[in-house]
Image (cartoon, rainbow, N blue to C red; front, side, top):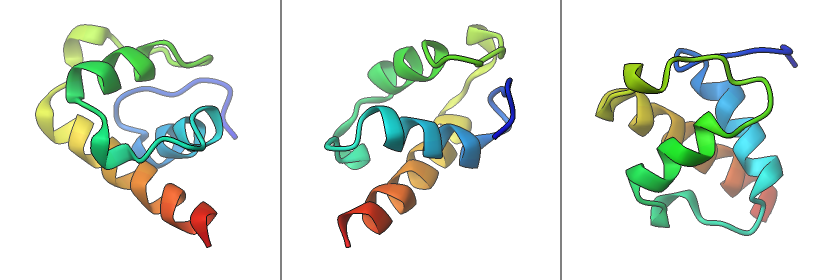
Length: 72
């Protein structure tokens, strides 16, 4: 795992969110909360103002893939 990452690392963020919030279904998380959770991750170095709906959606889908794999 990289020690730092930003908005363009959706897969890495998805993995870290799945580890931090294993029981949360990503599809139930509002983008405002997702933004807060991503910017609060250890190692996140992105500018909070540089997120957008597309980046948050990519992160949510990457997290959802991890979530589904962990539910098996």
